[in-house]
Amino acid sequence: MRVIAGIAKGHKLKAPRGLRVRPPLDRIKESLFNILGDRVQGARVLDLYAGSGSLGIEALSRGSEAATFVDSNMAAIQAIRENLVKTGLGDEVRVLRDRVTAAVRKLAREGQGFDLIFLDPPFKISLIELNMVFKSLAGDLVKEKGTVVLRLSTRRVPLEPPGFRVETNRVYGDSRLLIYRKGE
Image: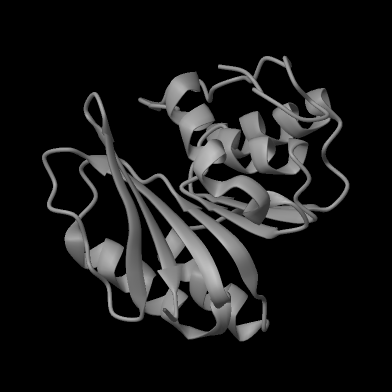
C-alpha cells in the first residue's frame, strides 16, 4: 500500500497491526481519484473508518487543504499518525479516536463542514449504523454539492440515502465503490 500521486507519491503506508484491515487496492484508489478529479484540490476531507488513513492521505498528497481522520481502534490511530509523519502531510490534520457515529455528531456540533468524505467501513457494518452516519452527514457536515465516497461489499445492496444522489457505482472485485453528491 502506497501513496499513488502528488507530493507524497511513492511513500509506503503502514497498516494497523492486529486488525483485519482491507485497505483499497492501488487500482481502486487510482480509479477513485481519477473520477474525483479536481474535487480533491483545496478540499476539506473527512476520512471515516480510516484504518491506515490511506484515502485521506492520498487526498492530502493531491492538494486537499485539510483532513480529519476518524477510527475507533488505537492501532489504526497509531498507524495514521505514523503515516502522516512519514509522508510529511501532518500540518492541517486532525486525528480522532472515536466511534464514527459519535464523531460525526461531535463534528456537526462544532460546525465543521467537509467537501469530500470517505466512508470505508468494515464490510459487515450494519445498515442501521450506515444509515445513522448518512443521516448525520445530510446536515451541514457535508458542504452543499459535497461528495461522499462509500466502499461496500458487492454482496450489499447499494444505499440510496435521502439528500444524496448516486453519481458513480462501480465494482472492483469484491468491492463496490459508490460516489454520492449532496443536494443535487
